[in-house]
Image 1 (tube, rainbow, N blue to C red):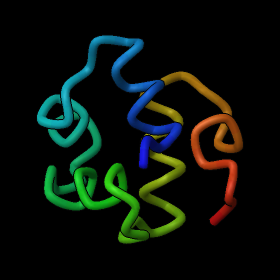
Image 2: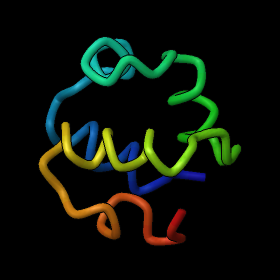
Image 3: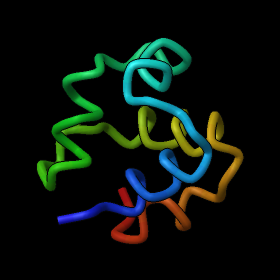
Image 4: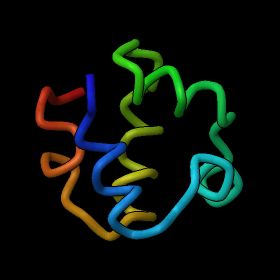
Length: 64
């Protein structure tokens, strides 16, 4: 399963490690989300969307 987060992150050339560093979210949680496990909290999703400069709904179409 390829999540929208993985696509957007890769398009911007940002690694999971770098996104983890910028967001303060453990890399393991980002990896879990990208592999189809819902492990991110709404405020974490909002932080990632902000860092990637995209609307929340663009990256997380399933919502909170």
